[in-house]
Length: 226
Ligand code: TYD
Image (cartoon, rainbow, N blue to C red; front, side):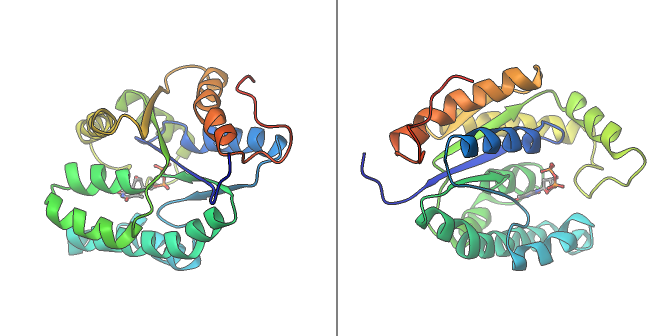
């Protein structure tokens, strides 16, 4: 099929769900099949947004309130979209992004109690019409995800969001599931409690047909298996 632009895939979920591992694995397979893949993350992903990342994750902005944090996330997202994501898609790349707009909806909106009108306005400015083609939500109980994060950090300090209570993380899990239920064409829930290989196969089985449909593999096309 003739096409004009690439494929934009976002990965969402709670802490310790394995997003970065799964993104790396998917990127490796797609590249081995001739695709042009850009791996990126939020907050960050562009020079401007990386500059804001530390301000947010260190907790330096926390005392100024959730509105201030939400605006910073939106500022970072807008820079990332316009400087990195949109240009890559225009070059027919597959963009795999670790967190995007749904994280703001969940972290600032649901557990930050920010009014949805305010968030909607920020979102419009931040993404400027660029919605993900597909969002993979890696789902697992918050207690398991947090235990993984704590084991991984081995004494290193947790970030501003990781430090929050289990109950808050469980609320986020529910909020991601609600987003998926309200937008079932874009969002796919993947059970992240299973073996890494099994999860990787499922993620590939979701993305590969979309890559193929858009004709993004430079070689013979992308198969769904393995
Ligand atoms: P990060 O260290 O990138 O880790 P991970 O994605 O693996 O959890 O931390 C990003 C943190 O920022 C994470 O706790 C979620 C939070 N966040 C928001 O609160 N709002 C947002 O819009 C985004 C993109 C992230």
